[in-house]
Length: 411
Image (cartoon, rainbow, N blue to C red; front, side, top):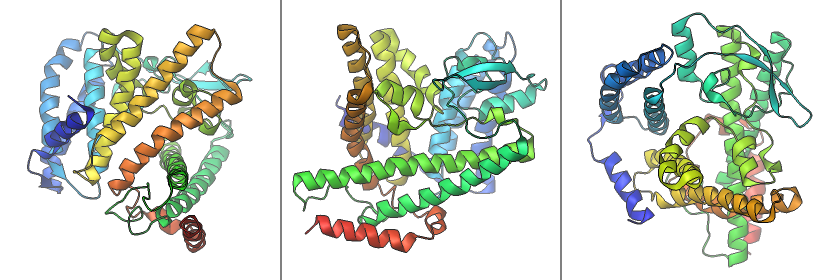
């Protein structure tokens, strides 16, 4: 079966059932049971000798997943589908876990290379139910024994003072919100009738010569990457501020999520350290199943294909007719690139790095990133309206600049 036909089959499964509108009643009957199953599994995985109970609970959770998928809401469908995917994968992982998870919150220090190292332990929560709540919300696993090998980027914020840390976090939230709104406006301004609209359109302008066409699409893809970079910072710093100010979290529970991805000198460094690691555990869990067949290569490819499925789900929620293969191929080729780097290192006994490694990384990311972003713009994902667009006071100036540049390309 080709990737294209597999993608169509996957999309057909998601389309096959009649949908129900999101109301208080449908939330209580279709969404809440899934959340309760998810939380119950989290409680059980913290207790010894509970795997048989988790196995019994798993079919009920699966049924709750199918019921939750039936609920639709235009504004929340993408987020809902992504949350359901993560809940499903994490529940499967927790069900397969034999030994209980342990809460081991730590403060982090950093060596001269910027690698996170454990400095001192913070007493773990004694409340089982608070630990379970932290587990269901902790995607990276900061402070948990299951997140071994997790890279923690250096934190430039003043972690020694909550007041100063909160002030710094709030200022960063405002900054990233402003930049995200500005860049989002820039992307949409390249073609307000297509890319900048919910109907969508391609980034590859057929009216341009090939060199100009791919230069234009590469600029759009790069700007889109920075939109995502800034958007995720917005949400993360908002969550950090609320959790520390209102819930009493320690600043060490909210370390940075990115580490200057534009400085990556290999694909392994890009995806293993410099890009965010929110879904690392879930994707690697899926990848391990492929590892039974393909060894380490199977784990790598399985993890990136799982990432492709995850990102296609978000696209599908916006446009049910969009093809899955561009997203699956784009993420799959990231896995291929990492395997090529491993082969290079075995043959030459030299690590990929330096300025040559940087050129290789950026070229590979740009090549397949173009295909990925084009799939998103065709679905109208980047044309969706957002309050962030209204935050940028330079919106008109950005539109005028980008539209002028685009007209110059078409002369």
